[in-house]
Length: 371
Image (cartoon, rainbow, N blue to C red; front, side, top):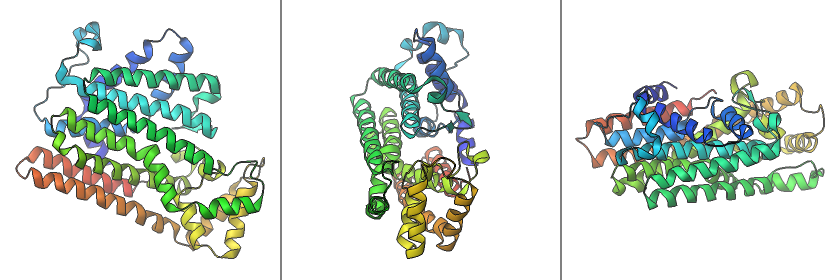
């Protein structure tokens, strides 16, 4: 995504500082296990979308902000406790990214995932208990950084986002088709009652709320609290757009590009928006096929290229890709409307408006994502 690359190039120094803070927080542990696992997942790539959004919104209001020089030996020696108050945005960005990393560790254990970002997942190397405990440690490190922002608003916003993430994860687990659901009537009922509204509620909690908090807290730390609610609306709808496309990509991209197994959601018994739309449009015979796939998906050696082809053919038959895209486009439209409201408030702020246009371009590129 070219727009994301532009943003990261603009934030090169800020991103370096944030990654330094994350690295230092990992090193603070006495446990070699913990350091190895945390380092494994923190360097596993990723788009750093949430922390980048936080920094970019802050910088959009503060064009004269002088980034901290992470290569300066005084910065390293002084440690992050002595960062100037003006640089609290770094603590916020680091906190958000560490929190996100912690949720990924827990997600991979819950989903029993084999790969993340082209690498073997941490729990497959070190075990479930170790991965969960490292996730807990990272949660604590995240909130240590939040305290250093000195903002109760920031603390409340990120704490609430964390609660939403946990609640949504529980809701998703309760709706997953599990091996013990080895009954076609049970599977039919689970799929049939799983509405798009339920799906949106889950991804709102798991993904969009942290995007919303990332954006609104950036506005607050930039001394523009009056705009926080608009940035929250943008972040929420940006996150919904991002996750819908992410769930669509799971069905349209192969493992080599995706960095994890293709059609992983269906292997894990997850019902996401492409399957909901497929179910709502499928005829009786195709519904029977869908139930059969979910009924057998946990059996050894059942899931193969034949199943992938069957699902792909049904997607083509019912135009599932375009129908799913239409939902993402709706939320992207709401996010763009929020950006336009910010622009109307500051018609003469050319720096802010220029950056807002980049965010608009990013949304369009997300809708066109292939990986």
